[in-house]
Length: 415
Image (cartoon, rainbow, N blue to C red):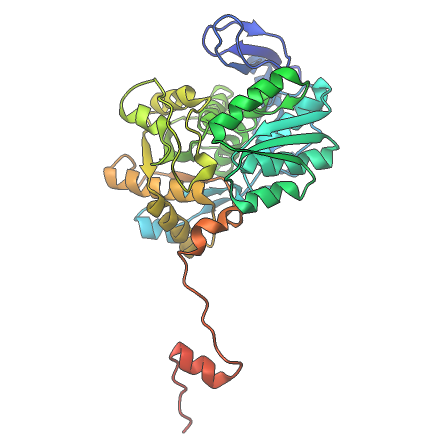
């Protein structure tokens, strides 16, 4: 039994709420988040305890919002932190790492973390049906994990989503609903549905619990670096939850004494065609101005991010910055990562690679700093955007001379 979850707390006015499927303060309409008894956690959680546990996200269970033992995602998390030496050479840096959630289980994105927490919590609350609004990765993960958990699922997506992500949801037998509108319109509809049906909407009424799963991305980075926080983490921003929870997770580790120093700057990375958070950062404003997305980066195409304000606050509090990548820069970033490190990322990863390059050129990141680039999804999910940018395969006849002639090879003459 996890006795360390105190309840929910409004992030604006500080009012407290019980551990129920709530997500908004009834007094000030601020968003709610989970609060913990850190003094109690400090008495039972240490590096040795964590390191002896199974290599999954639940190794940090005291800092996650369950009351009982986890039921889902027992093989999710603890993805590789890769020393990116060849990419580092291309960028002119030595201490460069890739946190690679493109190989997360079961659906190859960081959303497998948050869904594991959301479904475990939904079961604690007694829900039989789960649902979400999604730009793709969440749809895949919820459909897969709901199928395994024997929960009914309803998943709502923009009708123009990439075919790979549509197939990657339908295969699990989910009720997939394609809405003729962008993500923000899909999300508004889901808010109405959530008010009418007793379903666990993971990014609405279960959102405070669901979002806590993103902290494990940061926990793992610190542990894999030998219980140290890096100087920089570049994070793709859609709804803003991931970057704000990465920052929360690092602060929790510092408060618990699991890391000695917290010198990390978190940097927001967005596509130029949908960059409300980066725009606010550059304008030194905490007002998020909604935009209509126009980008190939559909996984980040949220024009009115629910946690945009908190994403900006995380960047400012950490001393970080924000930058954008054009669609062309995204494609080049995808190719650069693949050609140097053998990692095929989806478009969000192309954004973080391109933004890292810009931050280095601007001097926001120094050449000798330790840098972690967040790769949050697999390129197999968004093959359409890169297909026309690659060389075509060489065609030959089924004989050696055709191969040598086509490839321009000259056979050495025997003496």
